[in-house]
Length: 374
Image 1 (tube, rainbow, N blue to C red):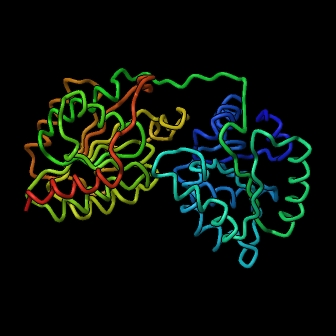
Image 2: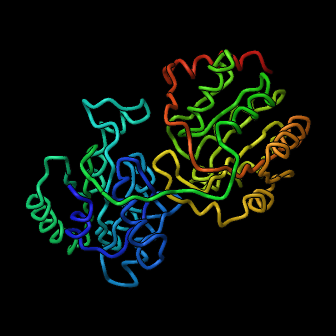
Image 3: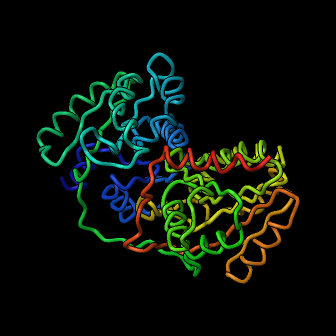
């Protein structure tokens, strides 16, 4: 189905969300049609943020907003859905558009498998009525579903269109780019060289895939790395939990701008605890690149100033490999919590692989490696 038809049938003029590769057609359509426009389209930090923003839109206009997200974001909307939107509280109607990763009987990455199994059940448990859109769904079926949804929305309840893989298409083209020159995979190679045999916790998406490939190319063990394949935004907290219990080794966190924004409160907790053995590297390309390249707001904020305000004793931003190598060396020698923001281009190899070890194997190898540290 053409995404334009979905948008027409829903009939809303305000969308907010967190990009998803399964919803790439919708995301690209919104960017081509509106760009980032506070009146019509806002990419938020996380899915709960979107839900609250949508509530504010409804309160100020009386109209029904749309929140789009990957199904992994259902966990982030539970609180605002059940304690804000629900018809037993404020009865605020919202249309959710949910990309269905990990749909049962379809191959997907391990972090999506269980989420895919419970996607519809979680929506139903939140009293959100779902309608599944697949490649075979007709316009008449979609219109009939929306007519039913309008009745539900009029009572202050919520509804959701759940989008199967390949269900939406869009012929428009859009290129996501920035003015930075450093390539993320090369940045990760420099981090690996500087970290030596220190443990690394890496964030969700292509960064972890590139770290895995770097170890392969170097003929190194993967035991040094914990790849946070899911749970976006939590890698720095995982690293903090490791560092607090292994105070005699450096712990590196390779993070991304979208992940940092998603749960930025983690930086405040990090800064308050001030672990002297963490090096927090934020690779900032101002984009949700793993799911298509749509922008984050990270290009508009001062990550270093945020880190310092949160209590990081040392924070620096770099945009050349010479500056990066110097910052990595200083951080490794330092006995203070350090943040290094690395300005990065958008883009990755077309043939970028995925980890060939299972998530469980990754965990067990990493835990075994950590036993050598006090």
